[in-house]
Length: 429
Image (tube, rainbow, N blue to C red; front, top):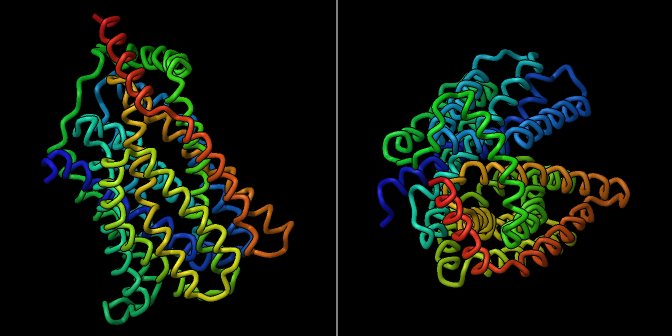
């Protein structure tokens, strides 16, 4: 059984995955176009939605390492996490009161929600070293992702039923049901973040007496981290591998619904596929945690990349919605596992005392990676003239990532990270 701090930490994934599933993947893109931006053309609404998502990623890319270093200096990972959580919760709740036609305000609130979601993940990831021993990273991380899939999937299922039958729940129309779903996400996120607040411990910072001293120390630490990563070749190689293969994972997450629409599948069928991924992902993430603990996270990640490669190849032959369901189930088998074990593997390759800062880099790599894949998919779709071929460039991302990951010496990387931790504690004494 997981400890109380581990379970409380894992419940944060249950809390904020509601935003990822209900808002990002589920309702906001469609509701934005049909309700808030109904006076814009489809191309214009898509354009502005894309700009907003890109802006959120860019802001996190630029700020994540600095914020992480500052949190390490102050011993403030939980405070930063809860601050970003508050921003995300308030922005999501505010969507409930936003009237039709106010597309600019909707985008600003969506931007704030994205920043709250992605920003909180930096510090939640970093807390893994405070709630688990190195040998337990895989299981703790997989438990969190499993709970995230289950929690997000349960709330999304309820919301889908609300939207399909609004009168049954006392709503005037579908729009009222969707707006209430946004308010429900905010409440869900806030309530299930409380266990982390109360039960998760946090290691002490580096004793900076003032905010100004902490900021100066954070920038010095950031410069030192660039140099340190260069002295940790396996950590650097893993980050490079992660950049490629997680770009493939994120591209499939972001583009799957659009891919299905381009093939002519009904939006209701795509919602069913998303639910399949969520509920298959719950037990699969737990299984992957055990596989990672038994065979090592590197081997399990490579196996997951192999499944993704087969999914991409199969997608080029897809003609029926049943095929889409089968691929959704296949993705559910590995999506949570590859994300959870990547977090666990990286946690074992970094020195103690710099977890928030280095997970800032980790999240920066993930967000920066999300730019290349969608661009390749969109370009290929235009050039090839066949949506079935648009995912083929993603196969290259998975192959490059697997080739680089294969070269990572996990045992050597862990020894190097331990030595760097010893050096840092000696130098600080």
